[in-house]
Structures are given as structure tokens and as C-alpha cells.
Image 1 (cartoon, rainbow, N blue to C red):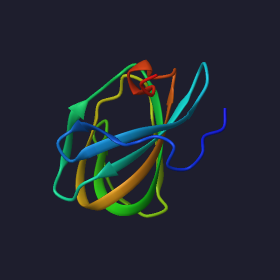
Image 2 (cartoon, helix red, strand yellow; image 1 turned 90 degrees about the vertical axis):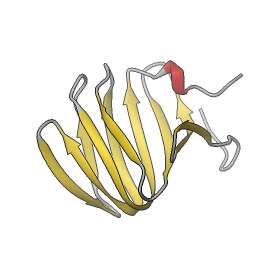
Image 3 (cartoon, one colour; image 1 turned 120 degrees about the vertical axis):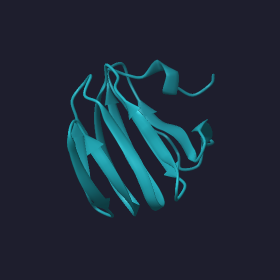
Image 4 (tube, rainbow, N blue to C red; image 1 turned 90 degrees about the horizontal axis):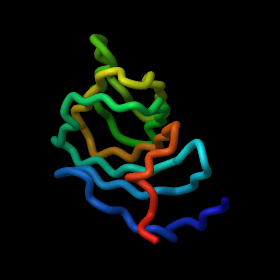
Length: 109
């Protein structure tokens, strides 16, 4: 699959968090997230392995019991069913890859 830049719109997920799917196939999906300063992604877990890269911004990221200060250029992987949460310290842009594919993140077709 090839996806042209700006061919898909961002859609809100929760207050201060918007997502757009980029490329996907049967086993993985790559998504871009816009995170507003002062927003939080509350503690949660899901059956997807999640690998992320912070393009810009700054946030506090908890994976399991450990907290990290994520800044531009930092990356992470979160095992499936591992509790995690995020506090957005600066407006941020994040790329995240999920496997298996998150069907709830697929574009509306």
C-alpha cells in the first residue's frame, strides 16, 4: 500500500487527541497522532503491540510502572496488554505502528 501525504483527514479520538491512519496491510497499521498540550491519554491497555516515534513535542509516558520523558526523536515499544498512559507536556506529533492491525483505526471507506 502507498499513501499520499494528506490523503486522509485526522479524526478525534478523545479530547485533545486526533489520529489519521497512514499505511496498513493485514498485520500492521501505521498512524499519525496530533496531541494537544495539556491533554492526557488515561491509563489503558489493549491486545496490540504498539511501537511509537515522537516527531515533535514533549510528553510524559508511562509503560507499566516506569515513567519516561519523551522528546523529539525518542521511540518506544509497548507489549500487548501492558498498561500505559501519556501526559502531553507540549503539542506533539507521534507516529505509531500497531500489530495486529487495529480495525477501529482503519479509514472510513
